[in-house]
Image (cartoon, rainbow, N blue to C red; front, top):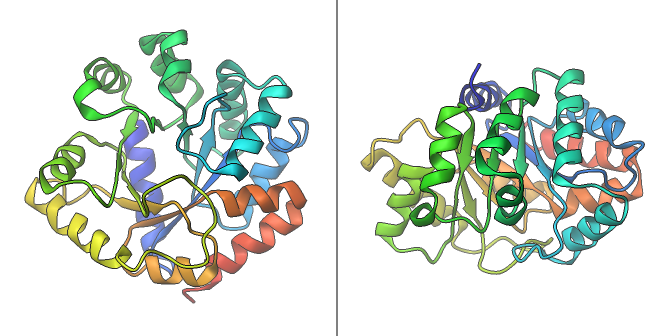
Length: 269
C-alpha cells in the first residue's frame, strides 16, 4: 500500500466517527524518554489518535514554539537523530500497523541523508510520508520526484496570508493531505482560535475543488489546545492537528496524554 493510500484510509475511517475529523497528533521522537516512547505512542493510538506526526529533532526548528523546541532539544541530547527517528517509526508501525505515521522534518537533515535514500527509508519502514515545513513547492522538484518514486506522501503547509494563486499552487503540489496553518507565527497552545479559521478552511475546501483536488483532505494545525477547539474545527476540516498540548501532557505521564486525547475524541459525540 502506498503512503498516500494509508493516509487516505485514516481520514475515511475518521469520517465515520462522531467528530467526523481525523485526530492527528504531533510527538517529538524519543521525548520525553526514549526507553518508554513506543509505549507512549501505543497509548496515544489506543486513546483515539488516528495519525501520528512524528517529529525529527532539529537544532533550529524555526516553525516551532517553546514547547516543541524544548522537546526537540531534549531529544537531541538523548541522541535522537533522523536515522534513529526512522528506526523508531519502523518499530511503531510494527506495533500498530493499521495507524499511519508521517514524519515532520526540516529539510537540512533530509539533504544530509540524501533525498532518495531518505524516501527509500520511509518506504522500507512503512512510514506514510513527510511534512517539511521549510520546503515550498517552487523549490521541491527533486523532493517531489523522490516522493513519487517511492509512493510516499509529501505534505505542504499553507498559511492564512497566502494569496489565492499561492494557495492553489500548494493544493496542487500536496499529497496525502494539506496542512493548513491556523495562524501566522510559530506552534504553541493558544486560548482562542483565529477568528478567521472557519473562513480560511471554507476557502481551501472551495479552492481544492477548483484545482481538481476535491479528494485531498485538509488538516488544520497550530494553536489547537482545547476540546472546544477540536469541536469547532471538526466542522470545517477533515483533520485537526494537536502538537504542543500533546507534548506538554506527554511530559507529565502516559495517563495524562491518554486522558486528554479521549477528551478531544469525545467532544463530537
